[in-house]
View 1 (cartoon, rainbow, N blue to C red):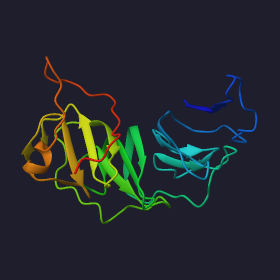
View 2 (cartoon, rainbow, N blue to C red; view 1 turned 135 degrees about the vertical axis):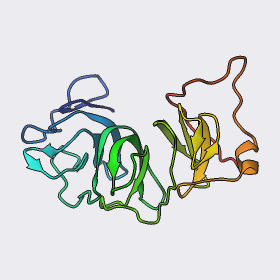
View 3 (cartoon, one colour; view 1 turned 90 degrees about the vertical axis):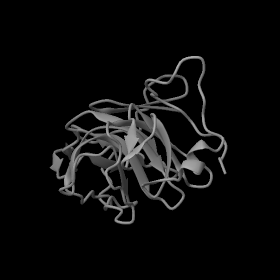
View 4 (tube, rainbow, N blue to C red; view 1 turned 45 degrees about the vertical axis):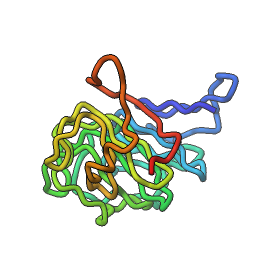
Amino acid sequence: MVWLCSKLLTRLNADGLKDTTLNPGGFGSSGIATGLKVLADDKILAGGSISSYNYQSGRNSFVRLNANGTLDQNFAVDYDGYVAGATEIVLQPDNKILVVGTLTYFNNQPPRSLISLNYNGSNDSTFKIQGGSNTNLITCALQDDSKVVIAGNFTNYNGVNINRIARINGGSLLSVSEQTKEEVKIYPNPVFLIEKFTVTLAVR
């Protein structure tokens, strides 16, 4: 089954035909959803420049939809901020949601590219970032040990010089020894921009 998300949501069957059981029941999203995650219960989490869904305002860049495309009223994002584009959404084992994107502001803090939400959409106050990356992140992947690998066009994270790929834990950059252990190397040319990657094995 393939999921596509643009201004409106479309789901395709395995044969490529439109799945008519997905029906938002109205106009759908007010803006473009650039990040999409299908959850274990078949609900759909979408993030992007979304201010309303089916004319219901206050969506604050994220919506969670039921499997049939209707709005899940049990999900409400309560942080003070705006996400111009969510490029990656990762569900962690504890059901907290990591979002990579372009944030214009967040809880009266400088813009940053990585936030964590609780499963109900509230801000995860345990996720601490002091500064974050000096440019936008593009993608992230979750390791088996719950550490997170982030990538993008950044050269600094939390005040530490590090080149475009880093491993973090709870928003904090891991030690230099953790970064260099079994580090990713790409030859012959240096990495300029990482757009997508997947972690298949835990790095310990």
